Image 1 (spheres, one colour):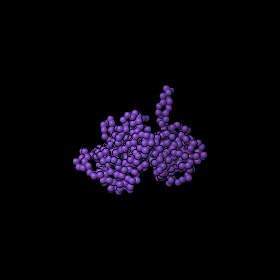
Image 2 (tube, rainbow, N blue to C red):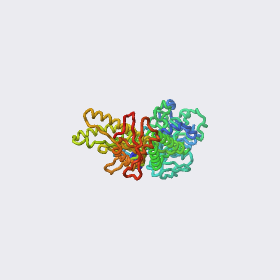
Image 3 (cartoon, rainbow, N blue to C red):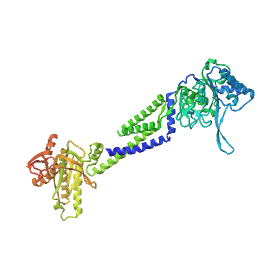
Image 4 (cartoon, rainbow, N blue to C red):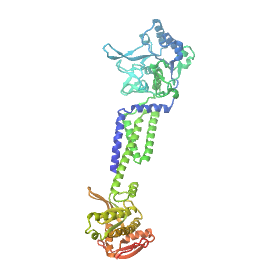
Length: 617
């Protein structure tokens, strides 16, 4: 058992280790992100509330105002309309001067509003030396001084232009944390000091807010739905006074491009993947990404990837559970492994939903699947090898049906020594020495082979085990390795058929002018030691004990009593308990002294008028 478990743990452990190493090395990340996005869709769209809203530079506005960039006087008029907004954040870059009067109008509007956050943007430009360098595009100076804050609008996207996180601060440009637009909006709305950003390993603190960060100063934000989930006002509708100021009173208003024509500022989020029409999940404009980030800061609904150690423990635990589950057999193992996979997914989702803690989901599924497959395949291979070993070991002792029975009842097989109740049959040819004298070896061998073939077939047919051939005799066991309650009856029935078959063989030999033969059979029942006995180089499945010796002695007594079959009282008692078969007659021979035994043994012989078997003299 320990050896089997050792092999199981070794095989499944190797595959589990591969999953573990590849998962921790990030090779499952793409699949993990698929599950991460699926959790959002499973949770479903939610209302983000009314704290943050979007003013969309949409198609309707473009039709009226023309394609951007619009005159800065237009933006100044917009700010006049938004006088009661808590904060106005522009996801619009004012990095180059235009007409002096126009710029002065916007600068004045920014100054009078007092709560305007402007956008900057990092770009990469190539020098004459062909080297690339990072450059920060800032608003023109006239706008910087009256602005309540400034932040960069760059949004990091994963493969497929999918946004799952935002960069909160930049630490490379000014030697201190420089905020993103969303963070600058938060700072301005809460009246915090933009110079008091406390950046520590793994987090950024400002005021009462603590934002978890990765090594790239990014945080995984929450999403409330696909595009147009946040309260959205058309730019032109606000500009033309179609809403009362109460619509944005004390709200954070973010202004930005929200038209499909602005493809460079259109993204996907976990809700908007796939077929946009069928799923009714429009793409997300960049301004709404910033809105999601601001709302995440305000609510604290960040998502934190699980530590490597936590994922490690999670994977190892699933591996151990699946190993034990798969050991229950292929079908039960499949059921329990499926259950383990379902529970692991449910647990990952529950932790994600309730604690905003992102555990592995794809790697655990792979761990469960590969562990189940490896344990099942290893068990199948091991079982097949055991089957072949059993067939090899017992194929020369028992019939094919008995071998199959052994394979079905392998838990009953004891290949080591075990005490078991059986019936032992010894048979020996009478006068074979005289027959073989003067005959060519091939004739002698042919006669033996013909005889043993017939006798072995009878023993096998009655579920007996051929222990060995003993020169011109044989030894058979009934009741091992497969246990039979009627082992004594099987042995007696086999003995009767052996005598009947010998009569037919004698008739055939006599017709050919060949010599006939007789046999003697000794049968005894009792407890013996059964198992593989021998040396490591050569072992045989056999039985040993006093009952075996007695059966051998009884076979030899046939010569003395002029009988063909002698049965011990011990076997007779077994038959009495099961009832005497019809047409069989027992003859009590009496008691006899047997070499090796202190007490005399009562013995019987049998005769059957139906089979024509009679005692011989």
